[in-house]
Amino acid sequence: MQEIDLGLVAARVLWAAFALSVVFGAIAQRTHFCTMGAIADVVHMGDWARMRMWVLAMAVAILGFNAMVAAGWIDAGNSIYAGARLNWLSALVGGALFGFGMVLASGCGSKTLVRIGGGNLKSLVVFVVMGIAAFATLKGITGVARVRSVDAVFASLATSQDVPTLFSAATGVAKGTAAALLGSLIAAAMLAWVFARPEGRSREVLLGGIGIGAAVAGVWWVSGVLGYVAEDPQTLQEAFVGTNSHRMESLSFVAPVAYTLDWLMYFSDSSQRLTLGIVSVLGVAVGSAAVALAGGGFRWEGFRNAEDTANHLGGGVLMGIGGVTALGCTIGQGLSGLSTLALGSFIALASIIGGAVAALHWQARRA
Image 1 (cartoon, helix red, strand yellow):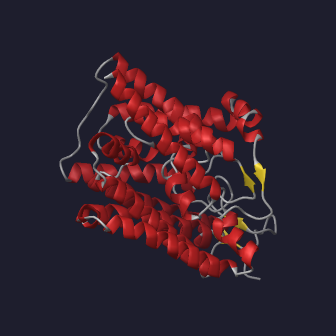
Image 2 (cartoon, rainbow, N blue to C red):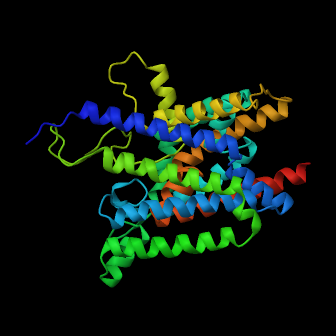
Image 3 (spheres, rainbow, N blue to C red):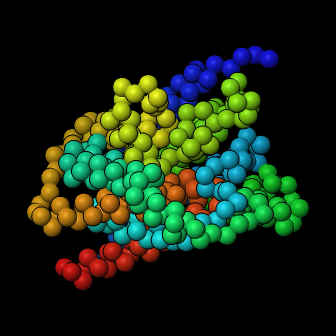
């Protein structure tokens, strides 16, 4: 048997993930891709253009992921989103907290990184606060509270919770066939809605939706195919190299922010390793900065007053706690998780939107 160089595999995974994240950041900066902004546009102005961009990204990610499942390259059950344990209460509570927090913080985790790349110092503060809150919810005091409360309420399924696997178990249809069929049908419905209006066919919407969705699908390929090792020489078990969860991962921007802070603070510790999540965080900021600097859009921006500061601090805390509790953010659950068609991702996404709408109405009443 040919010996596997895990270091070389990890390097390939990290460089590929970094490159795709740079593309993500560049496109997000260029097209103003923003989930919170999309929801705010609908609530305040009735403008659905950025919402169509987000849904187009979902459709592309769903098509890409399920095409790879149909080809036998990856399996949704190897991700953190599609396990047999459905933490529905965690998805509901965490999603609502994250959605409310992203409005207070002027953007979700990915938008925070994009705004940092554009010179926004407020987002730099949100980045630090969100990362600390996320780490506390992973391993600290709020993590204990999470495990003892919402995580204790769950449903145990006989199979992984992604819809194609559930459909396959119920009908006997092969999983790959089910993924191709359901992924295509769901994506087709989304595409039909996106293209039904002229704003859904604009150049900016097409670039943002297709580019962001393709980046998410691309990172799935990087972690699930390029980083897959059928037999780790040390454990003699299959492994996904270069990820924090040791499972297949795509883009997400809450827990990886915590891991980035941990890597920065303990850089000299020999046990610290760069991971797909960490390089993705850095890549988005780099891609955004490149476009902002090249296009003259780089501007330093600070807090207006004490209330603005308090809102961003509170938003960072809520996003850190909520994003970890819900297993992801608007990108982690709203694109990466949703592309697997996991039930928990649909619940988390609906809750994130609900939390954001509630926060927008609350802000309007205060104004």
